[in-house]
Image 1 (cartoon, rainbow, N blue to C red):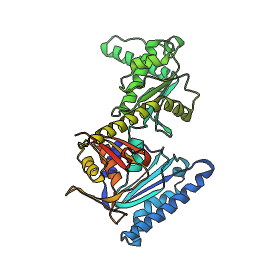
Image 2 (image 1 turned 90 degrees about the horizontal axis):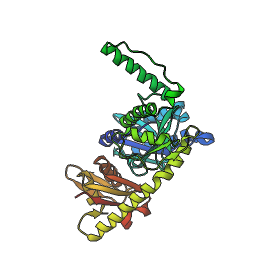
Image 3 (image 1 turned 60 degrees about the vertical axis):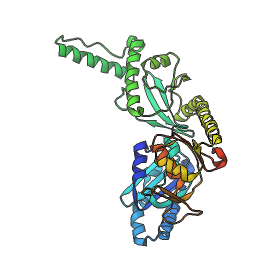
Image 4 (image 1 turned 45 degrees about the vertical axis):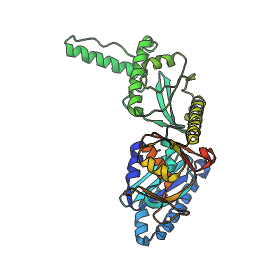
Length: 379
């Protein structure tokens, strides 16, 4: 599947054109996988209808959607689906992302891409990593509430024996530079493999690889491994958000799904507590009536663009149509979708995320204050 990061989101959010088409769909595996191209074909027909509504000529619409139409016969795509597929088509842009989210079917045509359905994947809420450790290798998984995917750990030795060989090569090179000649010692023997210092050195290499990949994140990392390995890795670790509790026992026989389930048991209380504290904080500030929190969409959209929203709750499957005009900083809310409208909830959520705020994409009944969004301000 395709890794989606914050820079991808920023690029998509900054793309603007006469017609920007966002398509979201759930994807099935196994016996039901044959329904995936049929589902996409129906959504592309929906996109054509929406393009006609906003005045696109049929030849222009067909040309615009041609890259997405080509996906219908892309065997590699349908062989390697995840839980959801997001497609973005614009005059100067085409991309698709297979994501570990059970997306709802949705087609949006407007001047900017619609991105709210993907924020659950990028938001720190419900987002965690699992590092499965053994002397025979390591796996780094990126997890959400629903699923996990393995991430490539580049420039990390495949196992402890390879790490020891790497160490020996470095020693010989250092010795040669000093003119000492040096000796090459055997690597990978039982004494080396069972030596704590050798394992510590290996885990220091793993830690560097992990930090290269997730250095800019503030997301829990859960360790999985046999009892004696976990404290050695903690000694090597430099990632500041390592979870105190780990998964004990050999991870080699556990599937990604099993590791995800056991790691979620570790981190779920952390996320539930953080969200409950955010709800309580919103209710406290809103109750004061001093402008420190709001569920007024016009105020929140403006504040999100100004970088003033610290925490935002937004309803998952609700669209609130209207227009935000950047040059005048004015927000217009419409009772139903009009040509050129934006989902203002999407606008507020994306801008909050890009400005470093925390976004909780939740069911409507979980939004505090009983509305479709609720914001806590930084100032």
